[in-house]
Image (tube, rainbow, N blue to C red; front, top):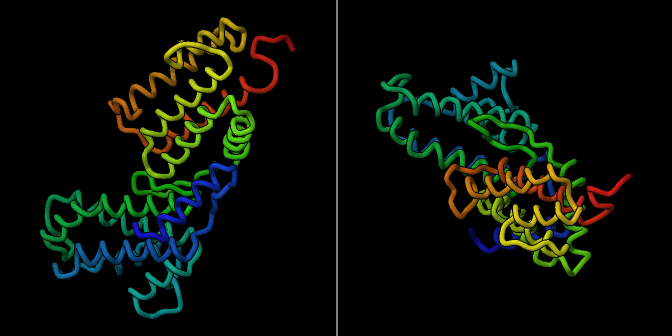
Length: 294
């Protein structure tokens, strides 16, 4: 990662921590070029000098049939048409193109025999390099704050704007406005940063720490989230059945957090922890206590 990219990511993280909503439905030119470079590198490295298989031509045919189009752009050259489309077409078309590349690659990676004109070397290269292509696509989407994620070879829309506005921003605003919550604010911002950096297990741990610190700032004692939730219940801040929140968060941190990581965590797991923690912090740190009569 070179200087300019590091600087942009750092500035984005600071903006997000300050409550700015950076999520977008649009692929900027920089993201489009990165995706095109990733596909080109993958195809060249896997099929460049092995057999007669034309991965781009076949992926293009798949997209054209699926969309009912004669071609993707004004270009009459198959390869140029495909790559020009990655740079010019609507986001839905770009995602369809990438899915086609991935679908065909997965078929080749999972095949037990050579077919279609590709070679044994190509199949071996696909198996080796496909995870890297998928990771590059996911990283590009994440770093450019695209509200879309790659899940099992398919693109899934992420509608996080509402949660961002109703949970994340209020959490950051509330925590940042009171010096008592300085440690909780730091942990919550760390959780957001770790999600964006592609470390969901760290984000889950930081989210649990944020709730523990927030409850501590409100006078609750104990060296675990559950113990501080118990104290909050005894003090009337939470209801008895809210104990399950602390138990769930500790179990998730033990299973998917960075300390043990017994089960792999993904961004969805991390966002779940962050959104729940944020909602609980906003509730307990503002307004009447949960046990107060209405």
